[in-house]
Image (cartoon, rainbow, N blue to C red; front, side, top):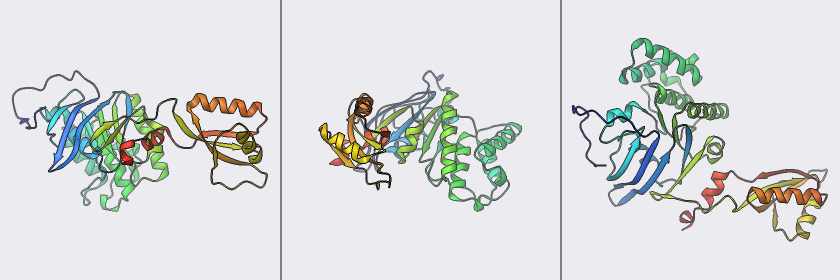
Length: 325
């Protein structure tokens, strides 16, 4: 990819889209001496939700800005819905829905007018735009605020309006930067359901978020960034993982674990008056957890529950050695 933006007014039409989803190869972008992206790689499949995970300063927002066509990379290859956002920006933007972490609005316009303005920018006909906007306002639960000024909307409501704006032209690729920021618990659940539905319809959904527990519940794939580079967590399917084990008799559980030589630690929760309680123990993968449960039941330990102490994405994130340096 050249770092020079082609003029979209050229008479040369963009090539037909041949690759669905998002593909990034060896992407670089520096701001002075700071390397925001340093050879990042990414593939986001059509029909799937891909989580973009990394700490602050890892390059997530820079990568999303490049994909959205708002930032020109220094070098590397990018394909969004089969289009290069630098060489053929108009074609790429036509298939891309972009939601930044903070959605600015024209406070004097109503929620409906904001969406109609963007629909017009994407050249939707007035009749199609009106129907689409009404549908989206209902989808993001803003129908009752449709004709009120955007200035009266809360931060969470503006986030939902931003999501509707990203969807107004029915894009094939959806890029979301911290979409759950400011949302209440009910709206977060609605967001997860909506993104899963969009992926099931065949859309490419790429989501950046620090709330890994929420990504765990909806993501099919994950890409980890650290210091501008794509990294692979050390955690593997069979790697040790912390599990929360709770029994109707904490004493029975701890006595048995100690007798088997298993290392455990208190989970920090108080023991109930009946003697029930739990511990944390590292277990090697799902197979190890299943074996632990079988052995405990065979030994007569009254196990009440056995669940991972953290989600798979969080566990993988914590294994990133680069973040410990």
